[in-house]
Image: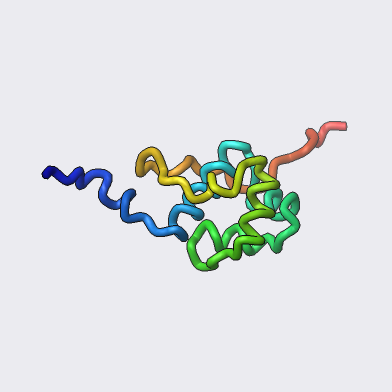
Length: 102
């Protein structure tokens, strides 16, 4: 039997890592900041950051709120990533809603 060691870490990924990875992936795909997602989900903005950095273990209720705000089934937050590549980060700082010119 041959073990694919390249995917071993993904297979061994625990639930907290899966949630962190998928939450960030989906949030970035939708172009949402952590703050915007938190507002849309009705959770404290620090929760999103703490979930994505694996310092907070969210309740099912929080996962329900986040998945609803993202428009996905809560189960999508527990999927194994298709590969080990993390999602690209969003640009730092706030996006300007309008140009400064009047």
